[in-house]
Amino acid sequence: MMTRTHWTIALFVLGLATAGLATFALLAAAPALAAEATAVAVDPGIVRWGFAAAAASAGLAALGAGYAVAQVGTAALGALAEKPELFGRVLVMVGLAEGIAIYGLIVSILILNRLG
Picture (tube, helix red, strand yellow):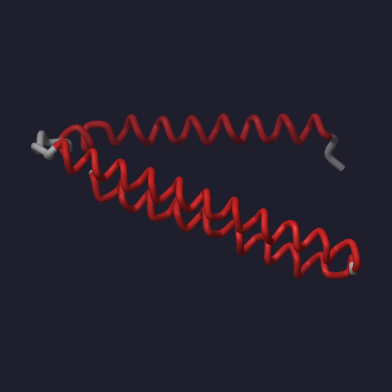
């Protein structure tokens, strides 16, 4: 059985190896990326509105998810106080409410990806 120290060392080594591999991959791809990056004139207004749309989608989704988790969490605690065996169902409902924020983040990433 591995102790906590062994797990910590193993995670550190795994993280270090992943960072090294990612750095090597970026260094190997640098010439191709530099050749691909050509100067394309982009209207600053488009970029500004794109960033605003990405921020709004992530921010409003997080706001909606926070409200949903507050409402569902309050009802969930009340239900769990009376019937503790409902924990699994309640956890799913709270997870669905948190999913709203993830959808907003995905939309934000898609918007930023279109900006280039």
